[in-house]
Image 1: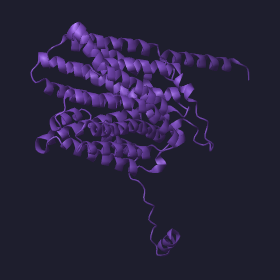
Image 2 (image 1 turned 120 degrees about the horizontal axis):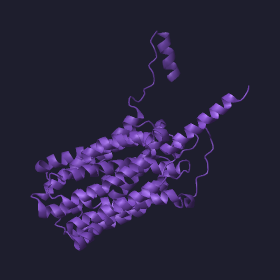
Image 3 (image 1 turned 90 degrees about the vertical axis):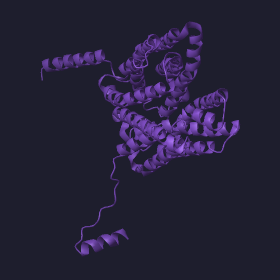
Image 4 (image 1 turned 30 degrees about the horizontal axis):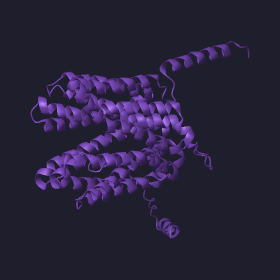
Length: 440
């Protein structure tokens, strides 16, 4: 039929109409996906406790138990989900599946009243969020390749934070008119938009071999590295421990700060919300800058900067009581978290490139650092009972100092350090000079 139409067009003097093409670049699809998934990765996230307490009259202990059980379960799934992403090689499909799981789990919360249905619904949504993060990383690698991955990961994270800000603004404005249920509708709309953006991306934009670090021209698929090779990689293990310590110091600091404000400031809830918004706003330009600096300055330097900022933030939180001045501490939170969100997937890709196990390793590293974050609130609360408010923040900062020491030691990337690059250039100049002196 196409040849008949083409012949008719030529015969009657009309220029044949070209085949329809996608008007958006693949990176534009990536941007849209990251905007829409920004707020849905954890399901209702911080709004879960508010919803259960306000609409179901749950106690804080019940909310805390559900949150803890869901958190432990999703940590255990992170590594296997990474292996699934590596093996299946269809991240667009997995993004759609993840968004459907998040949407279904969140909507199932609306009629749920008892403990088990709430736990099951929230676990479904959280499992979808865990898979979603790994699938988007794999899709990005398969679209832009490793060389452009740092800069694109910076853009991904920037758009992700923009999506969080948009959703938080819509929920804040809509709650007064529509009640707490607005959080469900905002999340549902963003999940549906993320599904549409992933489905609309041309299938040819993603290259499975490019995502794994294999030569794209070869027809045969190389053997993947064994799981033992990945999990015994010393640099990867040190990176995971350093990130767990970073999250041990970082994860519960805002929660602890909110509790401190109850005793030192008026309207602590409003101040906590402002701090969250400040941190998210800072993360947008920091993520863009980190993606650009990853190649120019090195991934290791970015990790050092993030870990260096954490003890400073802890010291500010420990010794400042004025909520206005504490905004500086949350600006540093945005800096550190913005850097970590960009640097970690890039470093893991560097350490596992060509193994066929990049998302497996990233999922495992995410689980380890997530365990540190899960323990952070308990660790901070325990330190507060022993040492008071100032001592508790300094204890959180101490975990950041140990992480800084590990990252400083860590030669975490495949690129040479600045001194190694200078040494290589000197050796190249000497070799060129010797070659020029030799007779023809």
